[in-house]
Image: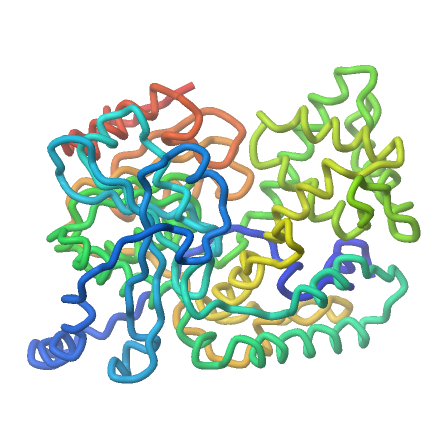
Length: 489
C-alpha cells in the first residue's frame, strides 16, 4: 500500500477526512398545495417560537474571537425538528450568535463559514466598521450536529482521539485497516445515534435555516456563506427561491460534483507552488529544488513514525499530526512563511507550530476535549452523496459505503427559476474549492461572479481586499449588482 493509502491508518474516521464542501439534492417534497399547507401547519410552532438571547457562555461556547473583539454579542438556540417527516417527534437545537445593527436596520445578515463543521458563531465579527454593521443584525449559526448546536455528532471519545493521533503503522495490512474502518463507523452510530446521523445532512440544514430566517423576523433571507456554506446557501435558494433577498457565496463549490472533488488536486498544486516559492531561499527546509520537495517532506516526516518531535506541552508531534497539520498552511499563500517555520522546527527536533496546526484541524481544546469538526465532515459527506464506486482492490474501503444510514441527496445541477440577483465570489487558485466550481455555480444560479486572482481559500470581508469587499457590501446593503465579470487582483 502507498503512503497516500495508508494516511487513513491509525486515525479515527473523525480525524481522517479533510475539510471541504459539496452540494447535494435537497429533495424537498413539492407535493400538492394542501399537503404543503398541512406540513406548514405542523411546523408552525417552530416558525413562531420566541428567542431568548443571552450570554454566549450559556451555550458552553469556548471560542475566543467573539470575546476578544466584540463585547455586545449574544447567543441563543433555535428549536427545530430532528426529523422533518416527524415534526411532533424529537427535536434539535441550532446555536445562533448575534450583534445588533448600530443604525437603521435592513434585517439580519445570516452567515456560515462552511466546513462542514466549522462554527459560525465567530462570524459576527465580519463587517466591523462597515455599513454591514450599521444596517444588519449580524448572525452566525452552527448547523445541526455541530459546534454549540445540540445534539452533536460524535465518533470517538477524547481519549480515543488522542490515541488515534499517535498511531501509525506503515506495515499494517489492508485487512486490519478495513477492520478498523468498520469499527470506527460502528462507533459513530453508537455515540451519535442513527436518528441524528440520518438527519444531519444539508437537506435538513436548509430547512433549519428557513426557520432561523423566520424567527429572526425576516420575510426574506440575506445570507453570506463561505466554502461548504455556499452549498447551504445555494440549496436554500433552490428550495425557497421566493424567500431569498440577497446571497453572497464565497469560495463556491460546484454543485454537480461530490464532496472532496478536486480537493487533493487543489492542495497538491498549492504545495507545489509553496515549494517553488520556498526554494528561492537558501535555507528552505525542503531544499532549493522544487522537483524533489515532496520527497524532502516525506524524509522530514518519516522519523516521526517512531519518535515524535518534542513539544513544549510534552505531548509530542506524531507522524499523523504532521501529515494533517501541514495542509492547514496551504489554504492561503499568506501562511506559507509559517509553514516554513514549522518545517524548520521539525528539522531541529521540535514540533510546537505543527502540533498547534493539527490541534486546530482536529478541533482539540486546551482542556484536552475535542469539538466535532472532523466528525461532522464525514457524517455530512456520507449522507449528502451516494458512496463512490469501489476503489482499487488494494485501497481501504470507503466509510460511506458502509455508513449505517442511507444518503439523502446527490450532486446535481441547479435549475431553479425566479431567484433575485445573487453574487458568487471565487479565487483563481483556491486549493479547497477550485475556481472552475465558482464559475459553474454562478452559471447555474445566473449570478454575478467576482473573481479574485490569488492563492487562498475565500476572500470576502476577511482580507481587506477593497475590490472585492466594496461591491459585496454595496450588494448586500443596496442590492446593487457588481460590475459584470469583475476581476480583482
